[in-house]
Length: 344
Image (tube, rainbow, N blue to C red; front, side, top):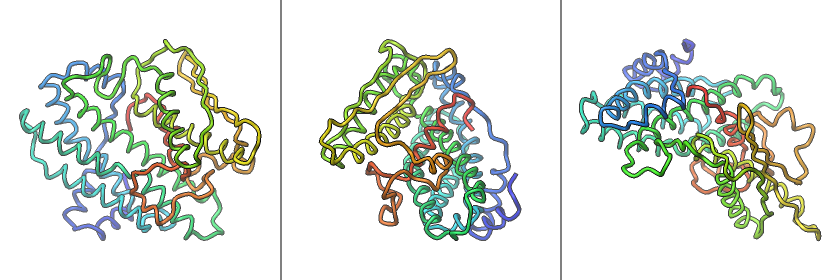
């Protein structure tokens, strides 16, 4: 349940009818959906199952989106009033309106129309992460310097919830949309690859990261990958790619900047993929100098960045371009997105 202050702020910002609707749906209970259930359900993408999936999302997505819209209105230290955060709030509000205005889904025709609509919602939210990262940077710029990191714990907790929720929403939409693919890749159930090779994903993600490094610096360190090329496990390729890509990109930047003016050979970034008893471990190591000891306690806080020039107002928070430097928001997503627990 949300605080009276949060609901009041929503009511002041939106029309009363919309505010009441957001409050009502935001107070409803979410339904957790596990990766295993998605695989079992998606293994039979019949018209009946697609209809059931659309009907579920028609009720589930407004609840999840309303919760985020309410929270975005009541963040501490004025974060809710930063321009980038207001933009994100408007995206969630627009998506809530779209979902609530869509009529009851009764047949295949309704389901196909609904699927197109939620595809557009997913696109609308493509730039939520960089926009929120910019909002945090705006807050950091405007914030009273006397505020100590411990007092920002409420913001960190919100952003953890917010990004976890975003992962869940995008996974639910993406899985439903992917189940319409008439010719899925072998072993794929929607977005889930039941025989995903982490070695292959690491190779592709590393090549993508190195291409960005080449564009930025004119050269890029090598990336050496070690592990069993025949090992596979069920996972979402796009999620694993994002995790590895962002971590390798950070390593490449650190190595490149540390050895830029050195006459010695630039050391490679190393990736080790290991299959454990209960999990899969992917270790990425480099010789980029590491994180300063003073920064270790802050590495997983959202107001900390290892980049020298994180995005500023000129970035707008809505660019599709990828740079070597950033706010490290995706580092936190890598930490949040590695669970196979029910989607929050």
